Amino acid sequence: MIQATIFYFLAAMILIPALLVVGLKNVFHSALWLVMSLFGVAGIYAMLAADFLFAVQIIVYAGGIMVILLFVVLLSGRPSDWAQRQVNEKAWAAGLFSLFFVAVLGTTLSNWSLIPKLEEPKLSTGQLGTLLLTDMVVPFEVVGIVLVAALIGAIYFSNRKSS
Amino acid sequence: MIGLKHYLFLGGILFSIGLFGVLSRRNIVGILMSIEILFNAVGINFVAFNRFTHPGIPWGHGFTLFVIGLAAAEAVVGLALVLAIYRNSRTVLVEKLNLLQG
Image (cartoon, rainbow over all chains, first blue to last red; front, side, top):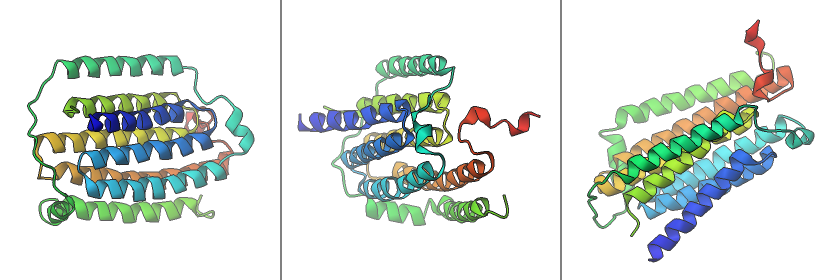
């Protein structure tokens, strides 16, 4: 019962801000609502016994990525831009397609069943660390290379002389 | 009792909200924010399947970690590109960016 209450509270905390993110005119307000939605997703990770992902979600998403997003929102454009129309002419088609997508997913999911293996959740940080350095070591190193490449690319693109 | 289906429904609805944002926003920064919503929906699904089908072997957690890391890389490069575009053409609206149209 208390689990259901927390789940529906977190679902509302994710979905309502997400709707505001895609619907609001003011991009700055959208970015601030996105922080709320990301915190809700962090709560879902905590409910699913993913303790390390809970911390990573808050530190990397709600901390790091959102700060960069707010910087760019404030650096690209004047506050007068935030009052103009934010959806294109084909937004109705996009809305129809999204509703169709939800309907297909909903009917598929309601006709589908799986017997879950319910065990008592354990703290997964230690296991995740072992996994990252044994079976997943190649993607782990590749992510390191990708992050370095992204760093160099960001410096290159934001360098005034090169662009 | 909250089961796997609840989490999958949540992930699906969140994914289609993000999809609507990607398809309908005019602002590049808004599109990037919608893409972050898509990544989060996928992450919820990964972790939910991990919790309910293979508890104790956190492969789904690892994949979600990689998704978060790549989202950080994508955000850094994408937003640097947005700044470069804004410096050159003074707009962040996608339909005004028709440099390749000839």
